[in-house]
Length: 232
Image 1: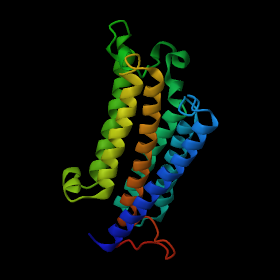
Image 2: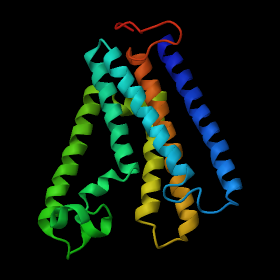
Image 3: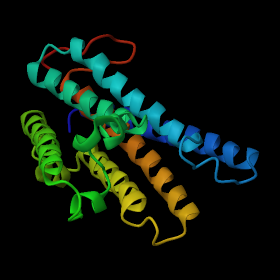
């Protein structure tokens, strides 16, 4: 592992530790201040607000890196990571609900799995939206293939960015499962607390992955030194 990657990994570890530590303090104060009520982990509560803040940080890191890269591959990588963070911000701010049937009528989309599997739901809107989502997913896979390393090889080599990204996907996926598939099967309050905390840790790991990936890609400037050369 070269010195630049070591510096990127160290910075990522400090970022993750710092964000998680600060979040723990804020969430703890929120719970104590509210008498350990559900307000802290409710929709629009303290934890969800922190998620939006961390997603925004990840977006800003990616956006900041785009014009500072002289390497096309690294510039594309920064755009991809910023785009992923932007999609997450749209979701957290509930802007995706602008595509719901309340707004688009019969051609609106529901994001719950029971709508997709329902025999009573209209077929054409489901096909159209499935094509949209599959197109977005394929675009992400293409961008990942163009910008990222071989994922299996990266994990085997102990690439911190890859492992942070895997952890992020796992925790964000667990939060989505808790919100969608397990709703109604388990007590709502602890389930929602688990969902929000898992997603907060997940987005923090994503931010760490962004920092660890962009720095040795010749994108993020060295602290106190200036821009990383294109050959770094």
